[in-house]
Amino acid sequence: MTFTQSQNYPVNQAVESFRGLDVDSQLALFWFIYKEMGSSVTPAAPAASTVSPDIAEGLFNQVKDMSHEEQLQIQRDLITGANTQTTRQYGSLSDTTKLLFWYLLAQGMDNGTVIPMPENYQLSGAAEQLLNVIKQMQFEEQITLFRDYVSPMGAEPKSGAGI
Ligand code: 45D
Image 1 (cartoon, rainbow, N blue to C red):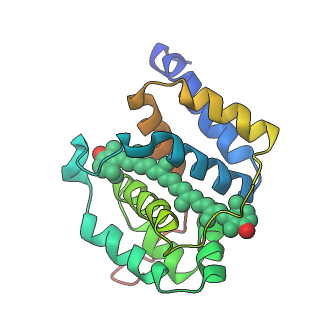
Image 2 (image 1 turned 45 degrees about the horizontal axis):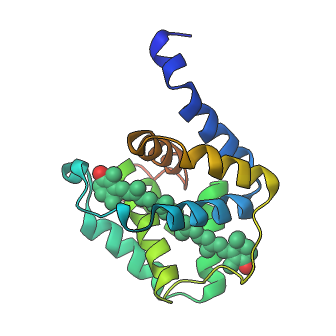
């Protein structure tokens, strides 16, 4: 392992642990992370040139118009890598645009356009531990972790112009 990799070890390990949780626990943990970050994440962040707000919003608007059950299914599909039109569209986004898409979903949960968390939802012990690890990371490390986490989700877009 190179020096650079070992320095990044905690982030890489956190991503691995995140993916090791069952699908619903991953969704729940991601939600609690969003809640922790609160207003500190504004879409006016630095990497603006690598993000396509219109594309993230376009995909979000499709999901927003679906039923709550479909909205939840799509989020589960993204995590499991199921192959659907929506997961392929997701797969065609840049990593930062993927992160923005998740951020829009979380905001949608906040303002009632996306299926909310069940009331009194309790994180599993493993998810709670991971949340505490992530809370202690530097902001830059958190962003790296989230980007690495959401990057391989969804499905490969079809080659050529199709999605
Ligand atoms: O019934 O450079 C359960 C940008 C149980 C700008 C459930 C940025 C069963 C450019 C499954 C729990 C803003 C992109 C239900 C940077 C059940 C830039 C449902 C930064 C209903 C740096 C659970 C962006 C559900 C950042 C629906 C930092 C859970 C973005 C859904 C961070 C959870 C985004 C969701 C985060 C979590 C998004 C949608 C932390 C989303 C989290």
